[in-house]
Image 1 (cartoon, rainbow, N blue to C red):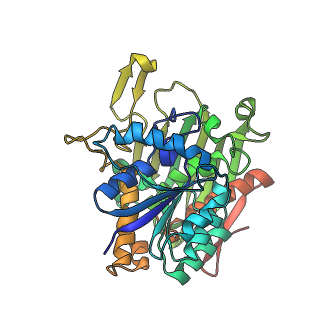
Image 2 (image 1 turned 90 degrees about the vertical axis):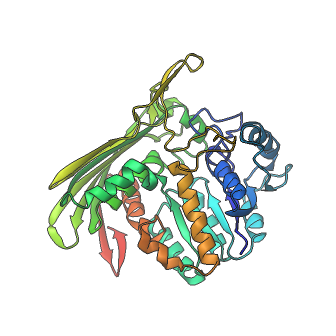
Length: 414
């Protein structure tokens, strides 16, 4: 059977590494989505590729960027794709035309502002298209459950791109946590430098916040560490000032912390605490693009993971100092044959898991529901993350603690 065809929705940093004026200054200078899918096509796992944005005039520069930084670096890797809208057109709903060109069983990846995830995913699902969505899946529980219902009706696979689940340290921690007794405390911190606010200025503080963007990583990890536990309340706090000094809209939070109570479903007397902090106003020259670490405490042990400084640093005079790099996420070095050699990076693995699932479903080798049972970050397996994120946003907006309850088999915010 022919491999799945994939449409990339969104043309920005994570998809192409292009940010309008040139290559991104982050650790994703040639992107993640496009490079990974170009390589999966080389390996025969992906068929035709296409890409859609809202501004077709960007595509000539994007193609030049991809040819220079991917094709010319990785043994002539094919970077061709069909683009929407055409190179002279701007169209906020170009994704509809692009999706309409697909066939049932094809797939899309969504890397667009958070407020657009629901509409794009819904449009694709109703046309029997498999969907990968960057985290957060949606901004609200209502939208999350709506997508679940429609996806079940159309029997399509919806997968949330929580790549931290495939980080070797984090996945190993999830296995070890099973033997450490009852959950007691979890603390995480994740940040990005202030320069990212230039990249995200069009939506930062308007359409979404830093908690949705970064806390989503570790909330999902916490949930994978503690099956059999559910969140019961969220109290959020946010600092302000720096982002608005950098011309973000008034009220944009610099750093957001979510204080979350969890309860064991089999013994409601067991209560635990989760604290998740995210910031996009970290220093410019911290040596890492993203500081990220967590501490997990249980009744019979604890786990600490620092995924910013992994014992590997590079000092480069041209870059102004020392940097702690992370080839475990995306290893951009070519292999011995000159091809892209980063197939073991957890950023790459996350997409390959999705593509493999789509191909197996299309070939009749697996059912969509099979993947809910395998610990993958499917739409069904990420409801808790959406619940905590939305509760945090409501807590900030309404200046109160937001309770999370289960009613009729669904989580609801009170």
